[in-house]
Length: 247
Image 1 (cartoon, rainbow, N blue to C red):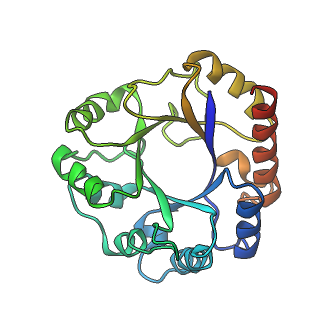
Image 2 (cartoon, helix red, strand yellow):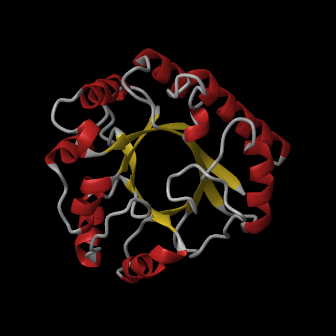
Image 3 (cartoon, one colour):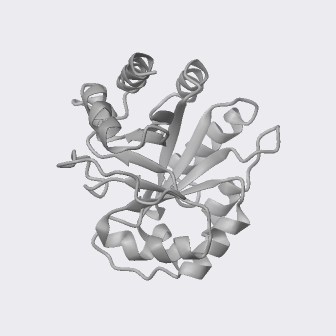
């Protein structure tokens, strides 16, 4: 299998923008994802202003930025509405004309609230942003929704995260569900266990698969509970070492 991106999730306003830019330049395969939801990211809240500043700093670089959309904003998008705060970021372009945010993950699994998934309206949003890769969490619970979206012929990717964003390793990793859609893997991954879990994932995916991996909770400092740049770099390094051993 080929690993296309090594995603580091949930950096926040206490992280230095220059540090993220430097890490992204050092490891072009890395990706940095912000968690977007209205309680912490709307209007001109500190995290929103911080991420917009990071986006502007990334406009003339090749570092990979992503957005993971949660809670009420997830619900709005699934009914066909893109909140203004999100749309203005999706519309921001790099100096080369490509979007600054290259991938958007809609977290349809997890949380206690129920919501409707309007397939055609979601497809319309994806078609409106052809240069952004859209990702949806996959679990058996979400299978019907994603099957309906697939039937529209819309391009999208899926993330296997059995824990629903709770950062727990699955009992077993899942093979790609549909050959038409790339699959990524998340849930309990971190610098200390990424190699052994890549071994396990490699056993269930076809040899020609293109995947990505995503870590969040285990990238945080155990004392401060904040996103830790050193832990993120170690996670990236250990994944790259696995890739070098398994060419």
